[in-house]
Length: 405
Length: 170
Image (cartoon, rainbow over all chains, first blue to last red; front, side):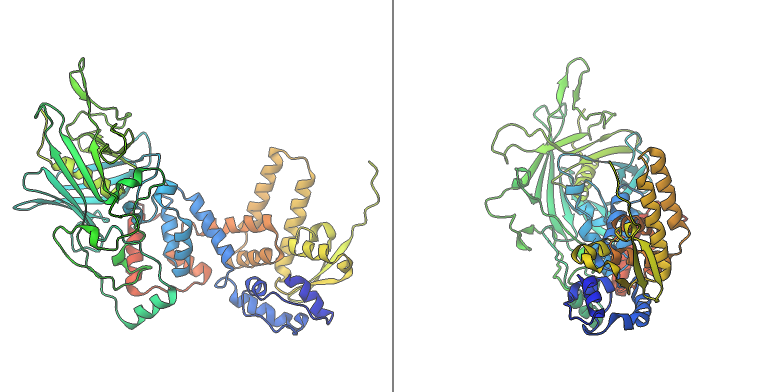
């Protein structure tokens, strides 16, 4: 104990001083063991004043940041957690360690949360607002159970019609929804007929980015200006719509193949890939990762993690079959009050039984989407899909030409 | 139960700026660092304890805090006592500027006074919670060690987080 040794020094005895304890408590370099502390007192005061906060013991800083993270648990106050992460590298490292992924905490914090699987065992409630005048869709996190007007902005998507297909460009910035923007994170592309869609991620889905050592990152950034890495196009999901056996008199059938999520993710003990950082931002990452543009690249060739073994199929989601309600003369699904207007666009996606051992349809609704107002729709999602994937899948529902009378 | 006459034993503490404080043993025992020392060296209680990391200004504030909290704890627990403790803590922190708050934290950490440290850490968290990144850097005397590209990414991240928030929200 450093205290004991100070006393012993004063009495002229030799004491052993724990170096670590000394550094941590005093916040600056250790003084020579034989130096009588009482003689140092005036020097000590000055050094103490100067070193003060910049050398704050890490456990104290961590304590303060943990308190902030714990108290700012909902939006809009959660913005303060993001702000603290922007103060300096040390703070960012600590905060990133403290903040848990949505899968564990059920909370969205950094923009990357939108690329990470949703919470297990509970649905994150969001809503989408459609703006017909600028062909843009806005995704919000619902903040208030009662209202679909009180939300935290998450993503925006703008529809771009082309001769042979339609693209929905997805961005983190509601005012800047374009492919060239630094806030571009992916897109949904439909085929000419509007029956098949592909979701593209601007960065590899299995990119488990590790935080590089501070020193090496600094060196690299000092030597060269890291160019902003251009976004790639990685297909992460394929969506298809079909008429059901009743033709247009029955609800359409919807299938989503989640290329980037293994079927095992929904088994007990399963995991889904979790991105940890936006590669193009150069924060916490090694800047020179290879990127390439391609029309419809399958992801197998890039950074396969231990999850995507040959045995593991991809997760396939299908829409839950509505039941025909004889008295009401309509197709019904139980949306638990989250959908209030009948619409062909409404759906609930569950894991398809062909993945699982049993032949029964899985009960767990992974994505739910439906109309609640003229241009307002709710979107509820959970593990193993992310907000980005959920949003893209819902957009396809707006676009598909497969309709129902 | 009969009680033996209790001497109010005093402990002498010497601060970094060479002021000596005589405090009652009960108060000194609130400083876990000192308590541990005495537990290991029961014969040392006559000695003056040097506190090279604590100024007299800090120590007198800390002694006041411990004295008050000991008095609160001696009384019967009730919601009105809790209320008084809360008010006392708020007042203790309110008048202090950021510099003295920092000094108190480092002193409370050195002396290992958990309740005071928790209270002060919470006060700092509350003070920087709603502030801009620049304010926080100034408060802590921290340098912005991001490159211009990283800074741009941070700004974009903050724009997303603050989107839709009233800009006068600081």
